[in-house]
Length: 137
Length: 338
Image 1: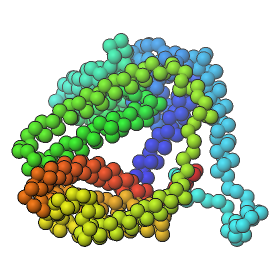
Image 2 (image 1 turned 180 degrees about the vertical axis):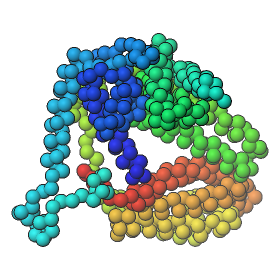
Image 3 (image 1 turned 180 degrees about the horizontal axis):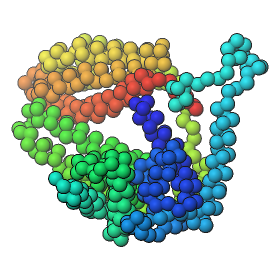
């Protein structure tokens, strides 16, 4: 059950990040399979059943442009970021940075030089460490 | 098998796979999507062959396709997200279905169950008519649910652009429901007073039959059936005292009243069942009073039948309330705003 909850939350967390990664990677032109490998090499494996529909959706939204071209004797569809996509990527990166900074601040250990009123001074000196179960809640 | 034969079989497998995926894709995008999936598959195979230093076998191609997923699921990723009724309307849709179930299906089932009881009590022969009507009920229920679903699906399509979902006034929200303990306590006290009078009345009836029959007590007398159910009626009268007493002393036991009521209703069920299986409730004190006794017997029989239907409804309601309260008691404590 916990695994299922984690898996669902992980997917939710990844969903937005994958869009950002795809847009960022497509600042240079890639065809589908090469894009998948490039992302994988950067440590962000993406399922092909997720990638191709996502590429189509981003293209429909005007964030990507694509064209078919022959390479190594095979027809391949190459994608790259559109002008509108560049603007949106910039905005998303700002949003992502702000969010990451906020989470970093939230997750930072609480400097507990002053005991919290009403709490045990000895335990208050310990940095706040969340148990895995608490982190999920 | 030669390399070209293996390649031919692999190509055939990929072509069959693409055909199966294509079956589910929209016609205008089909070729484009299939070309891209095909290219990806061949790139993957090429990579594998580079790593292995040889051509892939048919079974290895089959494994790649198996990992890719069932054709329907692969195609589904390319299709737009569709739902008949969106998340905004879904709670209302479920609410309406519940109302229909509560106001139509439940009463219908109770009446049907009551009719079945009367049949078993010997009022009529055969139950085939009841089974037939139960079949009709389900047809009507599914038709109603179908119509409601279609209506909501239509509203969902229209309401996407409707401003009513975004324009609302918080001041028009219903008042906060606060469970009044004073009201519960007052009800319990009133119930206790009536229950005590009720017990005294039940205990007095055997010696003073006019308390129940009025002037007819001089014309008819109680049949032996009352002796067999009298202890149960006294027990029910005592139970009606216990319930308000517990509510007053232990108000936190919210599961107790419906559960206890359920037990008393079951006992009442036994009483009404015994009465329904008996046709004679009163006997004439003299042969001249036979007509009066006959009329009273019929009246009591009809009253018992009505009581039986009411009892079935009360049983269903209390069973649901008891289940809800017990489930709530067993759930871990959660934060409540009120």
